[in-house]
Length: 150
Image (cartoon, rainbow, N blue to C red; front, side, top):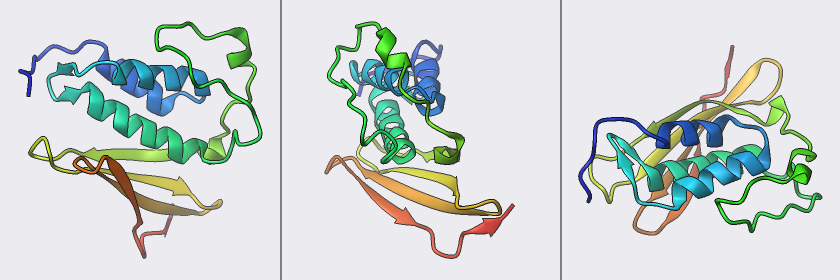
């Protein structure tokens, strides 16, 4: 592990962009920038942030763009093109809320992602995904009995 530094740089803004932006190309570019390095800033690790952001994007976008051709094979430093901004924006109904990331105590521990999704006007579903670092895969779990009325 490399040594951590205390000051914050570009990881938090890129992470926030990747999990909050509703424009596919912009959030994917933020993820690619995060994944392009093994940089650390305090508690922020670029690879972990990219991994979590990619999962959030996958959950939110799911099948929304399935019938639309998108060129996702771009270099992280290439600027977005006009056509990238002409795609439909991800609607509010696809958003996930209250994203919580539980980091492991050791570098090989699993990362846990917990979030809420609106089921309908009154109900929410709490979901959990666990990233297994050693196998490089996510395991999705829905917390039973955790749907509740707001």
